[in-house]
Image: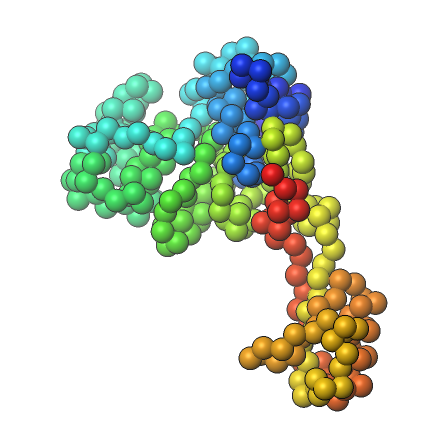
Length: 296
């Protein structure tokens, strides 16, 4: 469980986090989103015990991170946005190096490395890290964060700069880690990824919490459902575009409505013009639209 209470972080008079409070019950994925400068990375560093808050409290799995950050290290797997790898090492040697730091026996390190590489579909071919693609390097960095089998993971932009296939693979792998009972706190600019995999999402703006909840709860908070009604065979010349907000494209004629009253009005007007309802689509606001609504 994670419980943050009134976290504040100031740097030379600049407030990076301003009274941030949240909780997350346990195994699952907690997403943090916001525009650049919102405070995401600062918060992740505090949650990881790498940076101390100016004030406030933070407890992770019973550990008081503010007063005893070292106690968190053995149960934490941390992935920074930019992972500086030792580029003259092979991936196997790199994981062995970090495994030994955690006091893991060499035979166990070899076994864990093989399992992690298999799970990540990572075939190194004996390459040194400096010879690998960005996607391969990111997978190695993820493997490094897992070599000591932590139950608490903090990932800053886990799929940053990756091609769509690798990004999708990473999303699937994070869901697999969640299924193993791990807790993952992550930030991401890929908002579609956040919508897909996160159990709860927090939106930050200039260091303040603007919204917090499941995607369904956020959708309810930021706007009602939008209906798009598609019609077949209407006569557009019999429609008043100023009264009925419709549009035509290669798929046909469509009318958007924000509620059932508007939907019924559109349907009646277009039926009077000789059209018939072909299908009705519904859509909630996306996470991207929520961020735009909040502003910078």
